[in-house]
Every structure is written in C-alpha cells, then in structure tokens.
Length: 544
Image (cartoon, rainbow, N blue to C red):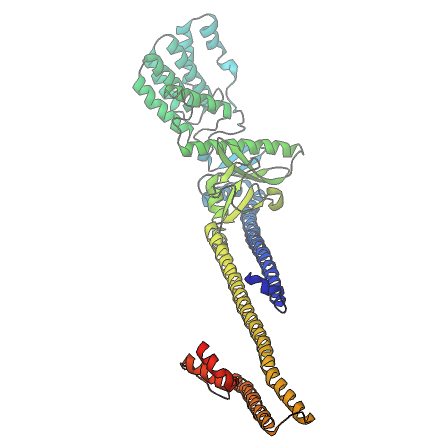
C-alpha cells in the first residue's frame, strides 16, 4: 500500500508531524469552543452590569422625585391652618389630576381639592336641634296616627328661624304628606328642603336627603323618565364629591342610584375610568386614616410610603406626621407617570432601557412590555426604599442579541481564518517534506546506481593494471589490447565523473539544459559502440 512507505525511514517523521498537527488542531478547536463560551458569558455579564447600573440610577431618580413630594408635605405640617389649606390646594393643583392632599388633625379631615374625594373616613356629627323639638309631632305621627295634626305641627316648625329646625321639620313634613298620599305637596316640600343646600338633617346634607326622598316618590308614582333623570343627576353629584359623606352613607346612596338606573346586573356598568379612579383615591384616604390611627397609638412610623391595590387600581400613599396632625399624599397612576417616571425618562433614554413597577404582591403598577424570560435587573422595595419593586430591561433586546451574534461571527471568522492558515501551512509543509523525502530517496537510488557504474570500470582497470604490473601478459599484442581497454575504461570513468559534475552544475543553476527528441535506435547503437566489444556488436545490434 502507498501509505506503507510512510513507515519507512525517514517517512515516519512525516507521520509524526501529521499526528502533532492533528493534536494541535484538536487543541485549537477546544480552545476556540472555550473562547466562545467565555465570550458569551462575558457579554451576558456586561449586559447585566449595564442593566444593574441603569436600575440603580433609575431607582435613585425615583427616590429623589418622591422625596421632593414628601418634603413638601413636611413643609405643610408647620404652616398655620389658613396658610396650610391654601398651600395644600396649590400643591394639589400643581400635581394635577388623580392626586389628593389630605390633612388629619383634631378638627377632622381636610382634602384638597375637596371635589376629588367621594367620601371621608370620618365626618364630625353636626350640631342640630334637640330631638325633643320634634317629639310632639312624631308622637302624633307614630303613636296616635293623627297624621293631619302631625302635618300641621311640622308646618309650624318649618317656619322656624332656626335652619336646623326648619330642615328637620321639612323632612318630616314630606314624609307625612307621602303617607297621606298628598304626593304633589310632598314633592314641593322636598324641593323646598333641597334649596337649603349644605344644612344638615339627621346627620345628612339636606339637599341629599331631599333628592333621595324625591327619587323614592317618583319611583312610587311610576314616573320612570323623571326618576332616571333625577338618578343620573344624583349619581353625578355623588361622584363629584359635593357632600361630605362617610363610606357607608356613600355606598348606600350609590346602591340606590344604581338600582334606579337599572344597573343591578353589573355594579360598575355605568362607571367610567374617572369614577373608578375617584373610588380608589377615596379608599386610599381611608387607608391613610387607619394609618393615622396607628400612628397616634404609637404602632406605626410617623412618615412612610406605601403602594396599595384598591378597586383594581394601584394607589400610592405617602405621609408625614407630627403628634398633632398628619399630611398625606394619595395619588393614582397619573402622579406616578407624570411626577416620578417622566423626570426619569431622559435617564432611561440615555441608558436605552425600559422600566416597570410592581407592588409587594407582584401586581403591575406601571406596565412594562418585556416577558418573564427577558434579562432584567430587579430592585426590591427593601433595596431602594420605594413602595414598589423596580424592573429594568433593555429597550431593544434584539439589538443586543444581534450585536452579540455579530461579535460571535467575527470571532468565529477569526478562528476559522487561523485554522485555515494552519491547515494550509500544514499541507504545504507536509507536501514539502514528502518531496524532500522523495528527493532523498532518489538521491539514495542515484548513488547506488552510480556506485554500480563506477564499480564496473574500476574493476576492469584494477584487473588489467594487476596483470600488466605482474608481467603476466604473454605477448605484446595482448599488452596493447590491455592498454586500449584501460584507455576506454578511463574515458568511461571520465564521462561518468563529468556527468555527475553536470548534475551538480544543473542543480546549482550554473548550466542550462533543455529537453529534445532522440532516436532510440541511434541511442542504442551509440551505447553498443561504447560499451560492447567488437565481437559482440553484431548480435547486440540484431537483438536491438
């Protein structure tokens, strides 16, 4: 087989070279794979470090923006009452929609702007007329069932100069007129009561009590169109924060209007986003009131921030307090976007990241458009002192993946180029070694052949020289033949030497040579004439 000659000296050196080359190629491939793995790991680490750096910057920006609002709340605490109310109104106007500035103190609850708060966690009981003022009329109405006398008694009290007494008398008069089926008179009485505006009756605003009674009367009369109109107006006023109501009272009247508007199948069917936002803010104020009670009992910190989930919406609650009062900020998503996230937008644009916020239960406060598998940096509330968990991810992760793939392709191209150079170099090196080995083998064969050619004339020269030197030549003719033979062998040896010198000159480039066509028969005759005796030429020529 052709490869057997590789194992013959010095061919085994070529085999050793090929084995070493294959070993180096395997080591190079392993190192290339390790390099790619390290490059991928390093690039992932760089991306994560960039996200972590951006997350720290964004968290610091959010904390700074939130601290500004807290400092302004703290400044409100030390202002006098009148100045505090005006400053709170200005701050609420500056912060925009979806934001309430709340104050709790011994006087009760203050909200700015008041029309954004649907109900209050606490409403002080108004000072009204004593129950004894209406006792005689109620005795006529409920005990003796003398409704005409009760009506006359209530009408007299309705002319009282005291607004509270007049409001209570009108409410009772309308009720009694309904019982006697004097419905137009009852409607007129309710209208008169509604015109008393903010005056309270039975702990409720007189207007609210009158409009609620009017709706009940319209329902009783079967005037559905008028009832729907009055119910929509009442519902709009309830959601405008027109009256200071507690949550149970508000929910009661909301339930009534919902029933009158035929919304029993879906409690929120007639509510838009603004109304839902207002409900969540009111629930946030109630949560802040509970916090204030814990602070007064020494069970909570005097300042803090918290994110709560109310009415399927996130609500931010921030407060500062002293031993006498508390000032708080209750805000929805608008405040978070405009006053916390918007100032951080130049930073996110510069770092080319997007952010998201989740509360302690993992609910989304500020939506983000990256999936769970995307690489991100996460900062919990315990790390940042924010009321949320901050998520930061690349804005265009596909571009980072493309950059990583580009660098990987460049590295693979470099490795492939180096491997190609090594393989090509190994091929040409092996080829050169093969040629050198073949040349060495040819030289060895050439030396053997030349040695054989030299040995023949030298043997003849030595034999003839010995015969002549020993005087064993019998005749002068034979001696002359021996001299001619010595001359021929000497010339033959001279031509061999000159031929070797010509090979050396041709290899050294000192002598040019070229190929030409020859006649084989003429070449055979020349060889015969040169090397064969006269007696053998005829037979050799014939055989040739």
